[in-house]
Image (cartoon, rainbow, N blue to C red; front, side, top):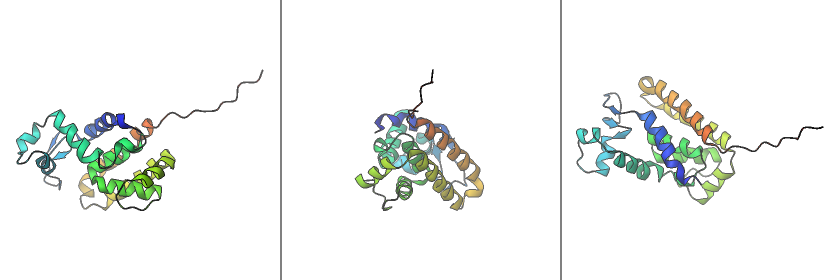
Length: 181
């Protein structure tokens, strides 16, 4: 459905994630462009903080494609919804992102985005799906013990995510009655 949307979605996420961070209040620890040291070490065993700081664009794209985009089946999701699920999956984990999408479209929330879930997503009104997803995502962020430290940023990112997702929706054809006379 949106196999070509990965670069667009990745660009949004990288813009939201920024560069180097090693905030002692962030449970993710050392992070570069949204990739934690732990995640990078899963990709490159024994990687150091310095290597993470110097991570290549190629490695960043590969980690996001294989670790986040593929698990949420971004290529199989409608435009806009792919961004909502992928970007949230970067923050909360792909499994949680899939479970929330399944909840929104009314299928068994089992974390497996198979044919039944994908069919339900395709049938659901995209704008409504995006709106409901943002509500669940906001609730998730509010439930975290680090809400006081990072909550404002998460809400700003969610607002931006919704705006960007809505912009990705296909243009709708408007039936206009031709002018009389």
